[in-house]
Amino acid sequence: MNAQLQTPSACPIAPPSTQEPLIGKSLEELRSLVKDMGEPAFRADQLHQWLYVHCVRNFDDMSNLKKSFRDKLAETHQVGSLSIAEKQVSQDGTTKYLFRLPDGKVVESVLMYFEERGTYALCLSTQVGCAVNCGFCATGKLGFMRNLSVAEIVEQYVYAQADSGKEVRNIVFMGQGEPMLNYDTVLQAIHILNKSAEVGMRHITISTSGIVPRIYDLAKEDMQLTLAISLHAPDNATREAIMPLNKKWPLEELMPALHHYVSTTGKRLTIEYILLAGVNDQPGHAHDLGKLLQGLKCNVNLIPYNPIGDAYGYKRPSGNAIHRFKDIVTAYGKKVTVRVERGVDIAAACGQLANKVQPV
Ligand code: SF4
Image 1 (spheres, rainbow, N blue to C red):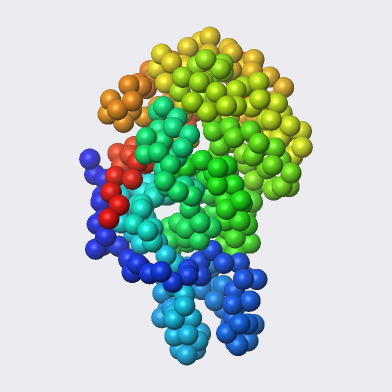
Image 2: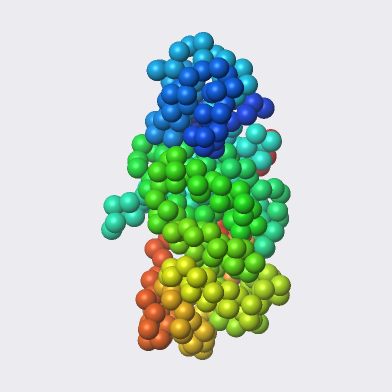
């Protein structure tokens, strides 16, 4: 394997601190802070630029702020609160960042390059661990530890943007955690990413395992983002076997919520479907999926499973099984894509994020 591992000594590290991070604050919040410090309002605009346009990691780099102001800020605040515990670069250029949080816990983000479109996309985490416990997912095996804060979510983006030197214009909330179980915080983070970091709302995707009440809530928000649903099975029995949350919100509840979302927002959904050999990849499953999705404005994204050793007992379907499944669902009038996995050699693919470095 040619995957490159960068140890912390090779990466910029912010020292641990209990001071409040500035990253994650809106321009309005920075204006209020600056006013309380007796500084003119334009200082907030300068600060905002350093945080979200130049993505600097320390006060000394904020060269147009007078030293006395920087020193005063540093007494009560830090630029960001994450430090890098590990960085791995895949053979295909995918970069996995393992961030250490102020309380010592760790969380991962993945930066992917899509050659055909010439764009970068960043997969962000929203929780440490996850309570949903999908059967094929490494994060689910960690259990739920805690929600991330607005600052911790936004800083994953700011860090990756600065470290890569690339223009990262696409964000997917598809990393560790269920974003809809940290709903208010994720929405606040999206507003900062959109307004301050200027990531277009149409370039932001929230992926959910199907937290039905939050789908109705999101429909009311009038946001132009994309909603992706991890469906993974066309019937309750199969879905429940791989996604225990289906007991709480079975398809009879999930599907009406999806129809409501589309009719309220006019937006096309993305249906995510992980293909597990012999579990949900048979022709009958494909026909049932085609029928289930009839009348729903959506595209289907098939994700051939990446085995994590033999850990969970699932296997990747053959190429023939994948194409057969795709053809059947396509015949029901759906646009179906097969996801090209990124970062397989560094375990950065969907469902593989497992915080390999343990908390200190
Ligand atoms: S797939 Fe997503 S929702 Fe399911 S356990 Fe993993 S992180 Fe949680």
